[in-house]
Length: 396
Image 1 (spheres, rainbow, N blue to C red):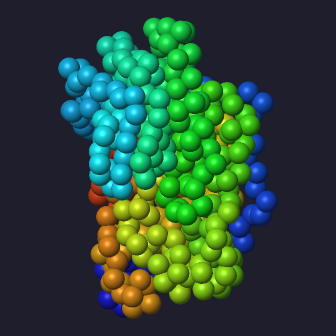
Image 2: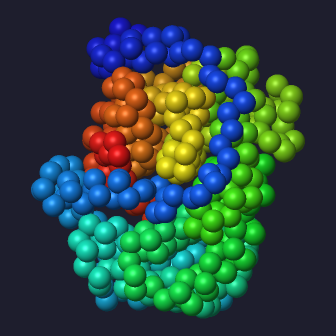
């Protein structure tokens, strides 16, 4: 322990914050607003203006992050969309029949939407629209074992990108918007809105995509359904010591007894604040879920319900701190995942760190160190995109 304190001076504060947390609020709800805020998926107008002002002023880390965005191959203006009628995805995208193309085209649309707003150069908006229109006129279905996950990964990026373009640029034809709406409603939302009780990261990103699409479609019922499932899944994914001696069951999960839940948690039987259902699987998949938890909370805040100040924020903060500690190199104790972790958290910390540290003032030294070490956060080529640019220090 003394060695850890030497390597990580903030470790004492880290564990102290775990002990001193008040009990999380119960019965939180996050219903759709009477009128949706637009743009309102992950970013609102004030946040977009904050980004543009920082980049225009040459301020860091935003200016560097924007330069990195423009250098991405996804932002190449000679890059063209590659739509398919049926996207067929096996486990780990094997076979990959349109899977990578779809995800990258959706991310390219989002990157171009961000570049449009910062630069006000219409070539980026037009490029984003070319991706929207190409896919909405072609795709009819996702198939294969990874179909729900693929649908959610791509759906998150489509919704973010389309929100920005639809509500800040006048050149997207109304007939094309209608086709895009139909695509999101019939090909994406219908396939993911009921979630997946089997795997945490699948369920959470499916709710993230469902929420974003619901905002774009002004669909109150789907928004409420997605949020209800999300609010049940988050407490089953990130453990707090106030829960009981073992984690909660996920909504609809067949794992309900203590023994079943321990097995579902990859045979982890000791639980501390911030440990997650997939920690002992690997940090990559755990990071996907941490990202989705933050993404949904960020959109919820824009739409009128601040989940960061309640139970969701508490769980997110501890999950970030716990995993950042070990990602930074802390010695893994024998009780944790049998003394062995598979690291690789990825660029998932910016949004949660900004919400809990910058906005709410919680000390998060390990998360801060990891976040700053990873800047500028780029994309994981799945559904994460340029969050240093969008959310570093963004208090709007």
